[in-house]
Image 1 (cartoon, rainbow over the protein chains, first blue to last red):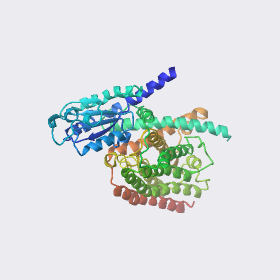
Image 2: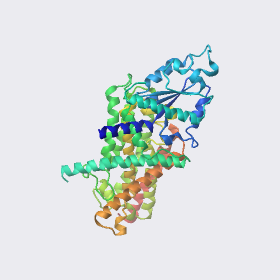
Image 3: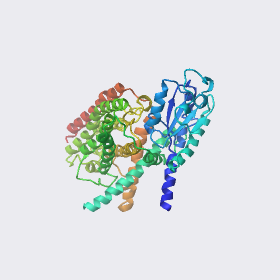
Image 4: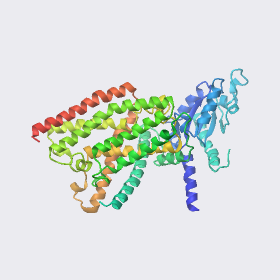
Length: 153
Length: 331
């Protein structure tokens, strides 16, 4: 039993401390994206938590989505979600991604991100501070733990 | 050497090499972060990364050639691990001593890069194809100075009547610095510089990470890889870092400290192995970490030009000086 426990802890620590994040802009104004990049700077340094920004959704554990979903992005968002290997978590960063924000009911968008793909963590703010984004990514770990235990979402 | 003995040694080298490789990868990331004024990930970060990758889904894209796509990571990993077995560890001979020499190690070092290019081409992603082309361009540029550095040393050893001069154990046991004249010293220094310049490209590290270039071609060669396959490429990179650093140490700084300090026996051996690990670390720190944080990524043509012109010329000049040294010293 002890061995199984140890394995379980290793699994969890792997996900807790080695989240790779793919950053996807579905039609945002670039404000949130700048804040996401700010989290990489020496001031906030997300790498100390093992969080790494990766260039391909295939490498990602976390999809960091910014902006309300515009029509041209609809197919792409769904495809990028499908391309991310399981277990995965989606975080909606910013007011637009969470609720459409100032673009609420606008004719040229399809609504917030959770109209298109399931979202696990919402980070409100316009734009949210880097601390809030880091907090959102760390909260995503809880969801991943549940996925790993095989209990679904 | 009996077969069983070799097997035990091989297991020891592989387990130890894996542990040291992870430690150095962690140190590399930590020190790079410190150089950039960040706190940086914990030392065990590479282990956590690999554990996590092993738990992820392993996706084979529909556009890929499945068997080639799956085979490439194994090929890269196995080649890197095999090359590790041909390296002299400090005072100890390589595990597979007598079954292959320097030339084989150079080829084994080329295989992971080729396997990555193959896997990239087989993955059916345009980003990976661009990455594969860049990898091949870069290989064609840096292999020549690398080969000159290796061959120059082996040739000078053979002119001194030391053989088999291509065997890594022989090269490591007979440092050239003491047996050449002043011209040879300059020549060896130039070859050393050329080999250090080749090291980051061999490992696809910034400023020569054009085949992967995350912000530009989305991970390039590795763009479609996930889960176990990505973990194998990660491990291959960890081991390959050790191999290339070990090659630099064996070719140019194979000195031990036990003999000058007058410590003999098993204690001296252990001291020399520890000193070997320190030398490996210094090479990795200088040729990978410091360069990685000091420069931005070069363009494809700049990388090719850097290796085809200055580096090749420096290594050729080094070889020429070694030849002149032989003429002056009279062999």
